[in-house]
Amino acid sequence: MEQSKKRFLKNMVGFSLNTWIGFAIGLIASPIATRLFSVDEMGKLNMFSLYASLFAATAYLGLDQAYVRFFREPPAGSTSKGLFTFCASSSLTFGLVAALIALPFWRGVSVQVATQPDMVVYLCLVVYSLCLIAFRYLSLSYRMEQNARLYTIQGVMQVLLTKIVYLTIAFRSAQAKLSIVMLTLLMAAFTLAFAFVQRRRVDRHFLTQVNAPFLKEVGAYAAPLIPLAIMSWLNNSVSVLVLRNLMSVAAVGVYTSGLVLASTINLIQTGFNTYWAPYVYENYQRNDQRRFFTVHRLMACLLTGFGLTMTLLQAPVYLLLGPAFRGSAVYFPFLFLTPISYCLSETTGMGIGIAKKSYWNTLIFMISALVSLGLSFLLIPLWQDAGAAMAAAGGAMVALGIRTLVGERYYKAIASYRYLGYSLGLMLLAAVANYALSANAVVKYIALAAIYALALYLFRREIATLLTTARQLLQGGADALKRKAARPTDEGDPS
Image (cartoon, rainbow, N blue to C red; front, side, top):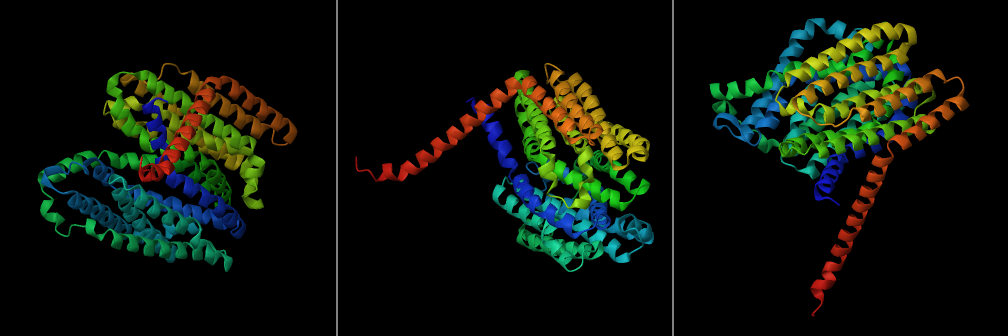
């Protein structure tokens, strides 16, 4: 097998390890949570997570990305420890100041989460958000050092706490408030423990390295990323926010539980997105666009195949959720269109990054969020939470279209738009059939099976390539194990 392809797939799988383990933990957590909590209480928990992620994304101030960019090349004579301490402490300080400024408005904030004013919920939101900020930097430090073992251990422990361990209190009382308090206490203890483990990264005298050139270089890189982080969060969350305000937290509970199942596609997306950027910047100057088009075709095949397979197997998949949460099954395929569109845009819009025109990403996320917002107000009154799924899908496809057109303008990465049409067309067909034919299961599954057969035909070349590559990887792994097993025998042979 071509070495570059083998290396690409190996690294993609390696970067996905955290996601695979998180997926396995999620398979355990979802059935427990959706049977312990009512849809209302689950909605409150998910709104808590939603607002905590907004708080953290705002408080990063783009400094998390600045830390990544300058880790190997600390600016203005600073050190990596000084850079880490400056970025982490600045984000945490800003988060704390923002929480104090927002304190007079605690009633309105807590109502959005708990449906009634609650100071305890507000304080938990602040503490949990600050922990998310700290964990972001603690995680990035291992990632930048390429310490996969400690990165995975830390990440898996965080997933265990936030998906499994906090549920223990729900066996006694399945109230969102008690679970929020437990989740916050556990996350605080976890963050303090790993901050202690990584205490040597902190430079107590980092302020001596902070001078005008340092601030100018770091600030110039970080500042444009602040609106991008907020737009990215809004783009992913606008349909949930509108659903919460037009309907109820119960509708949010059902909708976000469906999102959890649809997020299984992250098994492909996360590993790909993590490794794709360095791969692009390493290879784009070779002017060999064929390799990028090959990746685009294979990703379109993988993403579409995964989405259609999960749609076809939705009946056993939804057995994981409690009976009250299974209403999202009728619009389940629409939920796949957002991650599929985003992942495909990474292959078609890579010219934006190559040309260093990052402002386009902020503009595209803003347009996508506005489209999702408009569609949410239009479709949610008509089709409730199904309308929210359709609105999110619409915004994601608009973003894919714009990002593709702009990216291709700066760097020709794909030879044909055909595979975009295949992926979006097949998933839209499946989503419409699944929703429109939900009252007649037999006809619905016949239609879904026909769409699946069409996908197998359209992607037949890509499926053959993936199967061949998989066999070669397995054979290569088996050969490596044989060589490793034979080595001690060879060394002990006197001949």
